[in-house]
Image (cartoon, rainbow, N blue to C red; front, side, top):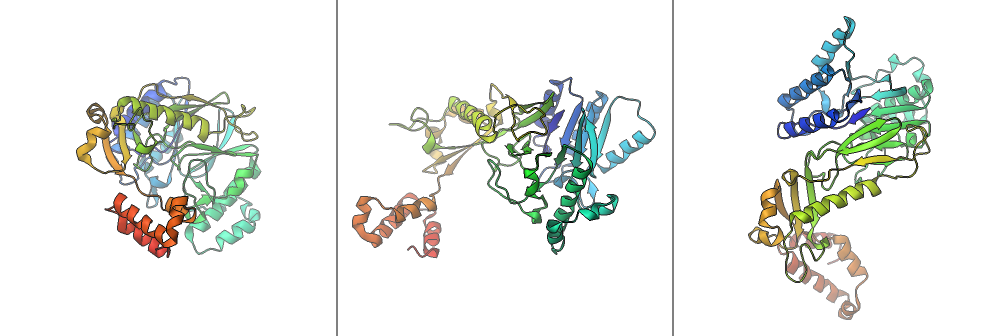
Length: 430
């Protein structure tokens, strides 16, 4: 099985995305089951031309006798329709009249159980509504959690309540079930994530993360991680500059062994000049960033991805159902294409006239884009200094320290001083 998540295809990256997809799938000729799990539409626009190119690619794979499972994500719902609604109807007709080929395309817009390579998988697409009448006896599963959420006037909370019943319903009918879905989990800070989500965002209950009879796989969140019985695969490319310093790629499951393959479609790197070694940017005299520094940064991200995001402990006796341990075979790019890298470099002085002192001319020419980003003062650090002053500032007394702080801010951050001054005033510190 190959797992491909959050394509978010757009004309700007269409060719790179399709080439990367094609190369990856062609490199795994023995894999016949391809699972595309949600978010084919780009975040910020509906690019019909790019989506048609993606559909042509689906047909190309179908002609190669592959089995495709194409799940609806939250971005793929256009009013009440699925983005590939016409294609779904066409392939439903094909199945009615008989398909002589050893291939299939299933556009999944409703929950269903599909047996793939001997494993029962429950596909949970992103739903706009759940018709509980389709599931006999499901009303008997209503618990306190369901009653609380369904009583809310918030539409998303009510939908989350019905999803809760669906998970319980399928769990009761199938043992050791794997859910392949396109949802958040409620109120959990996952590894590498800054945001948390609630039932108002449409989410599954975090109680399911404690269930050792279940395993969950999703994309949706664009940064990959493994947490308890949940594997989040991330996305295949950085579709926003907010996805900085992330490794993206594809997943493969074969004979109970997971493998990850870096896609290399594009990168947003953010490097803090203050964290670089004296051999790269600063040290005595200013030394400019070189291609070697970018390669080094990339390798550090790969190691961080491998060692810190995932808990690599013991192999699973059954990869889907285990005491929450995961082993992954990583396949990273050995060479980085600098033309696919957009670099932001944090510096103390925002001066593009001195760009060559920060980034060599050679590197500027090789990168897709390069920007300087001014370092922002950390207000928490400043407050800590106020609470724990050093010996010299203690001699100044409290008001002396406030004056020192104000003068420091004015000198270091003349353009944004008023912003920081207002924050400290609002906190009644100055």
